[in-house]
Length: 253
Image (cartoon, rainbow, N blue to C red; front, side, top):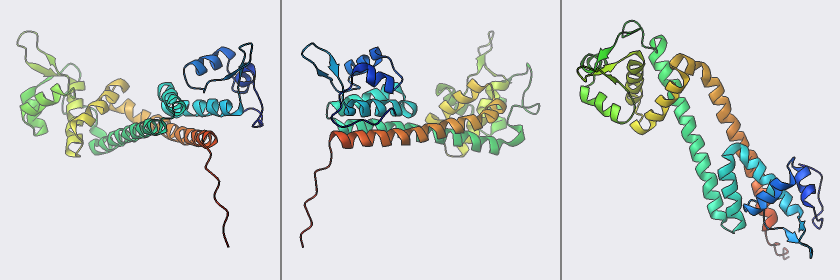
Protein backbone atom coordinates (compact mmCIF):
# COMPACT_ATOMS: atom_id res chain seq x y z
CA UNK A 1 0.00 0.00 0.00
CA UNK A 2 1.51 3.35 -1.00
CA UNK A 3 5.08 3.88 -2.22
CA UNK A 4 8.11 1.86 -1.21
CA UNK A 5 9.83 3.25 1.86
CA UNK A 6 13.49 3.19 2.79
CA UNK A 7 14.28 1.95 6.29
CA UNK A 8 15.73 5.32 7.35
CA UNK A 9 12.98 7.43 5.83
CA UNK A 10 11.02 9.73 8.12
CA UNK A 11 7.36 10.39 7.42
CA UNK A 12 5.14 13.25 8.41
CA UNK A 13 1.62 12.45 9.66
CA UNK A 14 0.25 13.64 6.32
CA UNK A 15 2.55 11.24 4.44
CA UNK A 16 1.37 8.27 6.47
CA UNK A 17 -2.24 9.38 6.21
CA UNK A 18 -2.21 9.83 2.43
CA UNK A 19 -0.53 6.48 1.81
CA UNK A 20 -3.40 4.73 3.62
CA UNK A 21 -6.32 6.92 2.54
CA UNK A 22 -6.78 8.41 6.01
CA UNK A 23 -6.88 11.80 7.63
CA UNK A 24 -3.96 13.01 9.72
CA UNK A 25 -6.31 13.11 12.70
CA UNK A 26 -7.07 9.40 12.22
CA UNK A 27 -3.35 8.64 12.27
CA UNK A 28 -2.94 10.61 15.49
CA UNK A 29 -5.95 8.84 16.98
CA UNK A 30 -4.48 5.44 16.11
CA UNK A 31 -1.23 6.38 17.80
CA UNK A 32 -3.01 7.58 20.92
CA UNK A 33 -5.07 4.35 20.98
CA UNK A 34 -1.90 2.23 20.87
CA UNK A 35 -2.65 0.88 17.40
CA UNK A 36 0.55 2.56 16.21
CA UNK A 37 3.74 2.64 18.26
CA UNK A 38 4.68 6.07 19.66
CA UNK A 39 6.07 8.46 17.07
CA UNK A 40 9.40 10.21 17.39
CA UNK A 41 9.11 13.86 18.31
CA UNK A 42 11.18 16.76 17.00
CA UNK A 43 12.49 19.42 19.40
CA UNK A 44 9.40 21.43 18.42
CA UNK A 45 7.04 18.53 19.19
CA UNK A 46 6.28 17.48 15.61
CA UNK A 47 5.58 13.79 15.04
CA UNK A 48 7.91 11.77 12.87
CA UNK A 49 6.89 8.34 11.64
CA UNK A 50 8.92 5.56 10.04
CA UNK A 51 8.33 2.64 7.68
CA UNK A 52 7.67 0.56 10.79
CA UNK A 53 4.67 2.76 11.56
CA UNK A 54 3.47 2.31 7.99
CA UNK A 55 3.69 -1.47 8.40
CA UNK A 56 1.77 -1.30 11.67
CA UNK A 57 -0.97 0.71 10.00
CA UNK A 58 -1.09 -1.69 7.05
CA UNK A 59 -1.38 -4.63 9.44
CA UNK A 60 -4.19 -2.97 11.35
CA UNK A 61 -6.12 -2.12 8.19
CA UNK A 62 -5.68 -5.66 6.87
CA UNK A 63 -6.90 -7.17 10.15
CA UNK A 64 -10.03 -5.01 10.16
CA UNK A 65 -11.88 -6.90 7.43
CA UNK A 66 -11.51 -10.31 9.01
CA UNK A 67 -11.54 -9.53 12.72
CA UNK A 68 -13.39 -6.25 13.15
CA UNK A 69 -12.17 -2.99 14.66
CA UNK A 70 -12.17 -4.06 18.30
CA UNK A 71 -10.10 -7.22 17.84
CA UNK A 72 -7.76 -5.63 15.30
CA UNK A 73 -7.08 -2.77 17.71
CA UNK A 74 -6.55 -5.13 20.65
CA UNK A 75 -4.12 -7.21 18.60
CA UNK A 76 -1.96 -4.20 17.73
CA UNK A 77 -2.09 -2.87 21.29
CA UNK A 78 -0.93 -6.25 22.56
CA UNK A 79 1.94 -6.28 20.07
CA UNK A 80 3.03 -2.81 21.13
CA UNK A 81 3.13 -3.82 24.79
CA UNK A 82 5.24 -6.88 23.87
CA UNK A 83 2.32 -9.22 24.65
CA UNK A 84 2.61 -11.13 21.39
CA UNK A 85 1.12 -14.29 22.89
CA UNK A 86 -1.99 -12.31 23.82
CA UNK A 87 -2.19 -10.98 20.27
CA UNK A 88 -2.03 -14.53 18.91
CA UNK A 89 -4.71 -15.66 21.35
CA UNK A 90 -7.02 -12.92 20.07
CA UNK A 91 -6.39 -14.08 16.51
CA UNK A 92 -7.16 -17.67 17.56
CA UNK A 93 -10.46 -16.57 19.12
CA UNK A 94 -11.54 -14.93 15.86
CA UNK A 95 -10.72 -18.08 13.92
CA UNK A 96 -12.66 -20.16 16.44
CA UNK A 97 -15.66 -17.85 16.03
CA UNK A 98 -15.46 -18.17 12.25
CA UNK A 99 -15.39 -21.96 12.57
CA UNK A 100 -18.40 -21.83 14.89
CA UNK A 101 -20.26 -19.68 12.36
CA UNK A 102 -19.42 -22.15 9.59
CA UNK A 103 -20.75 -25.03 11.65
CA UNK A 104 -23.96 -23.13 12.31
CA UNK A 105 -24.40 -22.49 8.59
CA UNK A 106 -23.72 -26.14 7.79
CA UNK A 107 -26.25 -27.19 10.43
CA UNK A 108 -28.88 -24.99 8.75
CA UNK A 109 -28.08 -26.50 5.35
CA UNK A 110 -28.27 -30.03 6.73
CA UNK A 111 -31.55 -29.35 8.53
CA UNK A 112 -33.09 -27.87 5.39
CA UNK A 113 -32.08 -30.94 3.38
CA UNK A 114 -33.42 -33.30 6.04
CA UNK A 115 -36.73 -31.49 6.37
CA UNK A 116 -37.16 -31.49 2.61
CA UNK A 117 -39.99 -29.70 0.79
CA UNK A 118 -42.09 -29.67 3.95
CA UNK A 119 -39.57 -27.42 5.71
CA UNK A 120 -42.12 -24.77 6.42
CA UNK A 121 -45.08 -25.62 8.63
CA UNK A 122 -47.52 -26.62 5.93
CA UNK A 123 -51.22 -27.49 6.00
CA UNK A 124 -50.55 -30.96 7.38
CA UNK A 125 -49.35 -29.32 10.57
CA UNK A 126 -50.71 -25.85 11.12
CA UNK A 127 -51.27 -22.87 8.87
CA UNK A 128 -52.86 -19.47 8.79
CA UNK A 129 -54.48 -18.56 12.09
CA UNK A 130 -54.51 -22.15 13.38
CA UNK A 131 -52.59 -23.03 16.51
CA UNK A 132 -51.49 -26.17 18.30
CA UNK A 133 -51.32 -26.90 22.02
CA UNK A 134 -48.30 -28.46 23.66
CA UNK A 135 -49.76 -31.98 24.01
CA UNK A 136 -50.73 -32.51 20.35
CA UNK A 137 -47.51 -30.90 19.13
CA UNK A 138 -45.37 -33.08 21.38
CA UNK A 139 -47.26 -36.15 20.17
CA UNK A 140 -46.74 -35.23 16.51
CA UNK A 141 -43.00 -34.82 17.13
CA UNK A 142 -42.73 -37.96 19.24
CA UNK A 143 -41.59 -35.96 22.27
CA UNK A 144 -42.74 -35.40 25.80
CA UNK A 145 -44.35 -32.04 26.63
CA UNK A 146 -41.57 -31.55 29.20
CA UNK A 147 -39.06 -31.52 26.34
CA UNK A 148 -40.88 -28.66 24.61
CA UNK A 149 -40.99 -26.76 27.90
CA UNK A 150 -37.24 -27.27 28.29
CA UNK A 151 -36.66 -26.01 24.76
CA UNK A 152 -38.71 -22.94 25.60
CA UNK A 153 -36.41 -22.18 28.53
CA UNK A 154 -33.46 -22.34 26.14
CA UNK A 155 -35.19 -19.99 23.70
CA UNK A 156 -35.57 -22.63 20.98
CA UNK A 157 -39.34 -22.26 20.79
CA UNK A 158 -41.42 -19.25 21.75
CA UNK A 159 -45.07 -20.19 22.15
CA UNK A 160 -47.65 -17.57 23.00
CA UNK A 161 -50.07 -17.97 25.92
CA UNK A 162 -53.82 -18.24 25.77
CA UNK A 163 -55.02 -15.07 27.57
CA UNK A 164 -57.88 -16.92 29.27
CA UNK A 165 -56.32 -20.21 30.26
CA UNK A 166 -52.60 -19.47 30.20
CA UNK A 167 -51.99 -22.56 28.07
CA UNK A 168 -49.11 -22.52 25.61
CA UNK A 169 -50.22 -22.09 22.02
CA UNK A 170 -47.96 -22.71 19.03
CA UNK A 171 -48.61 -20.82 15.82
CA UNK A 172 -47.08 -21.77 12.45
CA UNK A 173 -43.73 -20.10 13.24
CA UNK A 174 -43.47 -21.78 16.65
CA UNK A 175 -44.32 -25.16 15.11
CA UNK A 176 -41.65 -24.57 12.46
CA UNK A 177 -39.07 -23.80 15.18
CA UNK A 178 -40.06 -26.92 17.15
CA UNK A 179 -39.71 -29.10 14.07
CA UNK A 180 -36.34 -27.63 13.18
CA UNK A 181 -35.09 -27.96 16.76
CA UNK A 182 -36.25 -31.58 16.80
CA UNK A 183 -34.42 -32.30 13.54
CA UNK A 184 -31.21 -30.72 14.79
CA UNK A 185 -31.36 -32.56 18.11
CA UNK A 186 -31.73 -35.81 16.22
CA UNK A 187 -28.61 -34.81 14.30
CA UNK A 188 -26.68 -34.51 17.57
CA UNK A 189 -26.55 -30.73 17.85
CA UNK A 190 -26.53 -29.43 21.46
CA UNK A 191 -29.14 -26.92 22.59
CA UNK A 192 -26.58 -24.13 22.95
CA UNK A 193 -25.82 -24.41 19.22
CA UNK A 194 -29.42 -24.71 18.11
CA UNK A 195 -30.54 -21.46 19.79
CA UNK A 196 -28.40 -19.09 17.65
CA UNK A 197 -29.32 -21.09 14.55
CA UNK A 198 -33.03 -20.53 15.20
CA UNK A 199 -32.29 -16.86 15.73
CA UNK A 200 -30.96 -16.86 12.16
CA UNK A 201 -34.19 -18.48 10.94
CA UNK A 202 -36.33 -15.88 12.71
CA UNK A 203 -34.18 -13.00 11.45
CA UNK A 204 -34.59 -14.27 7.87
CA UNK A 205 -38.36 -14.57 8.30
CA UNK A 206 -38.52 -18.35 7.90
CA UNK A 207 -36.72 -21.28 6.37
CA UNK A 208 -37.44 -20.47 2.74
CA UNK A 209 -35.93 -16.95 2.90
CA UNK A 210 -33.03 -18.39 4.89
CA UNK A 211 -32.41 -21.05 2.25
CA UNK A 212 -32.23 -18.32 -0.38
CA UNK A 213 -29.78 -16.38 1.80
CA UNK A 214 -27.43 -19.30 2.46
CA UNK A 215 -25.33 -18.49 -0.60
CA UNK A 216 -24.73 -14.95 0.63
CA UNK A 217 -24.02 -16.26 4.11
CA UNK A 218 -21.46 -18.70 2.73
CA UNK A 219 -19.83 -15.96 0.66
CA UNK A 220 -19.54 -13.71 3.69
CA UNK A 221 -17.86 -16.47 5.71
CA UNK A 222 -15.46 -17.19 2.85
CA UNK A 223 -14.69 -13.48 2.59
CA UNK A 224 -13.91 -13.32 6.29
CA UNK A 225 -11.65 -16.35 5.99
CA UNK A 226 -9.71 -14.81 3.09
CA UNK A 227 -9.49 -11.50 4.93
CA UNK A 228 -8.08 -13.28 7.98
CA UNK A 229 -5.40 -14.83 5.78
CA UNK A 230 -4.49 -11.43 4.35
CA UNK A 231 -4.43 -9.91 7.83
CA UNK A 232 -2.22 -12.71 9.12
CA UNK A 233 0.30 -12.10 6.34
CA UNK A 234 0.49 -8.37 7.10
CA UNK A 235 0.75 -8.97 10.83
CA UNK A 236 3.46 -11.57 10.38
CA UNK A 237 5.48 -9.18 8.22
CA UNK A 238 5.14 -6.49 10.86
CA UNK A 239 6.16 -8.82 13.69
CA UNK A 240 9.21 -9.92 11.74
CA UNK A 241 10.19 -6.31 11.09
CA UNK A 242 9.78 -5.38 14.75
CA UNK A 243 11.82 -8.32 16.00
CA UNK A 244 13.89 -9.75 13.16
CA UNK A 245 15.33 -13.19 13.61
CA UNK A 246 18.96 -13.16 14.80
CA UNK A 247 21.50 -13.97 12.10
CA UNK A 248 22.46 -17.58 11.84
CA UNK A 249 26.06 -18.49 12.55
CA UNK A 250 28.10 -19.23 9.43
CA UNK A 251 28.38 -22.81 8.35
CA UNK A 252 31.61 -24.37 9.45
CA UNK A 253 33.49 -26.68 7.16
